[in-house]
Length: 256
Image 1 (cartoon, one colour):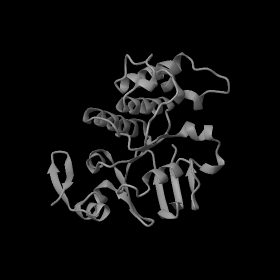
Image 2 (cartoon, one colour):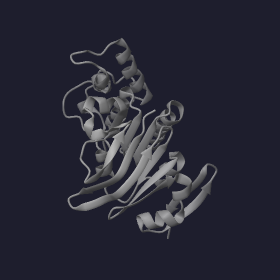
Image 3 (cartoon, helix red, strand yellow):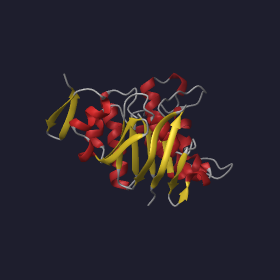
Image 4 (cartoon, one colour):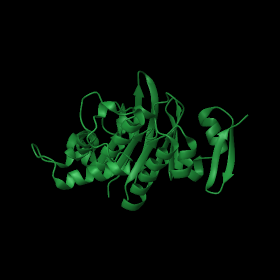
């Protein structure tokens, strides 16, 4: 089992404090939602937790080692990140792009084998891109490109998923499909996920745990049952919130 742990983490960007003293343990079987207003620093925090940037203080531990002591290939075998924006500028096929997810598992100069290709084809089918295998990625719509990026992450098979607005550019059907797939990975194969979301109701439907960013380094973490309520959400977003009871739990609408 692989955990991603933040220990007394301080993160800032351009002099703006994102989190101060963050202690967080992403454990197998947990599906975390990362919530906060626009521009609060969710993307900055995710990049730091992925080892792409250096924190101001504290450390991040992946498995049993500090993430800044691990080579990128070793990190990529355990941790995968879906970036906020997906743009393909170099001509490549959908299948070739999905296969890049296997690169952390291949040796130097080793080419993808039959099993790697099978994993890529299966992931392409899972995101409703079957029949697109030979198409150029430069001709994909925003939603199609987003789904392909998620397929590449599936092919990578990391134990920890860091997802920056995975439902960006997706219609309702594909939003649910992607979130169902992440939940399945977390529940059935004991992975862990941390997902930045703007839709509070997706967090309410899927997430077991919540990390809230309030600004000026202030944060709060806990179970979804503890944090997804009217008082907390009004404090977080600084606007009225109306809770609504549904057959699958509480959902939240903008209030008057």
